[in-house]
Amino acid sequence: MKNKNNIKLLNRKTLKPNLNIDIEDSFFKTNITFIQKSLINDAYSNKNFHYNKAFELFKSINNIIYIVYTNKINSIILYNIINNKKIYEIKNPHKNPIICFRYHLDNIKKRDLILSISFYQIKLWNINNTECLFNITKNNDDFYYSAGFLNDNKNIYLIISNYNENNFYNKQIPESFKVYDVNGYKIQRFEKFKENAKIIEHFYDDKSFKNFIIISNNLSIKSYDFDEDKMCNTFEKSNNIMDIIISKKDNKNILIGIKIFNNEINIWDIYSGKLLKLYKDYGIMSPSYLSCICLWNEEKLFFGTKVHKEFKLNGNGNSDYYIIKLINLKDGSIMDNITILKQEIITIKKIIHPKYDECLIFQDLNGEINLLKIQLITK
Image (cartoon, rainbow, N blue to C red; front, side, top):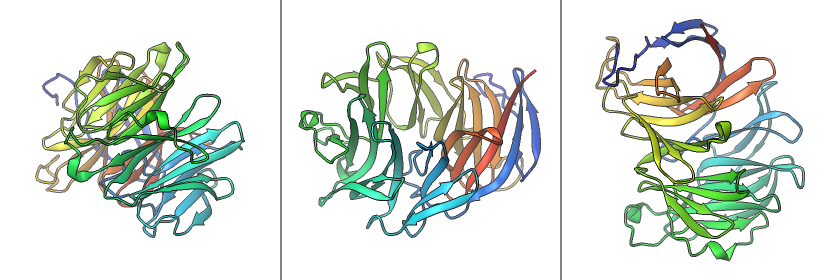
């Protein structure tokens, strides 16, 4: 089976617990094994506000691998992924549902920092002792949507965005992202930038030794020079981006993004904003959409996609199909498809597990967080 770009679509197979599946295409054989069907079954995410940060996965200052996630009663839960043990639960940390988390390793004070973002409140936590370092609360119609960390080797900063549903597409209504230090002090020099942000990322350029802020919303992606306080570039054809990720392979710094309804994967030069590559038609059938992405060894990309229920796949009726795909970033060829029947995949990340080596961790809207061992074997 081929799409109009002459890219071979592999047979889609449904994974079962502890089932080995070997699939081949013209370049690779992929051995995929479910090590454990469900690590966590009480996770929660608001389906409209996840943007690939429904949970945060990190190796702590003590070299322990943790997941931070929230549940239906809005707790913050720290979970040890190696021994499958819940470490603690912070109850009622926010008045409103938690949208997402962001992690940062503070090497200066030797601690693990977590941002928890809810509609009208953002809190910064020392996750090692559950101490809330500060919180920022809004009292107007705008609400928080995204946040990120930036480290300039001297200080740690928080980049925080506003969002207003009523004026999201209206360029005439100014909205700004704001920058704070970890003590909660607002950095006033960034007040001049008026940019509504859905996704915030930080990029450190090893060549110029500068820090850049990457801001994405429904209209465009823009880059800002953090050190010189200026807007650098608007990325070419960068509207309606669902998720972005930065790759630094071989000092070729690129930004990768997926378009939610266009079934497109876009690759830009991070310095100029020029669109380098565009890969299309990954939804199998239309209408469908792409949801979240995970970079795999800088050369490959896993991403989630959904096929809507009014279309039949393999003659199995009118159910929705939720698929994790693996592509080669060099040429866009599909290397593998994994069909997940339960729910949409909303967050997907890579982990080096001490027992299972390279694995994917992914969360679905059903509240399950799963571990999936990945083996890519060249013929």
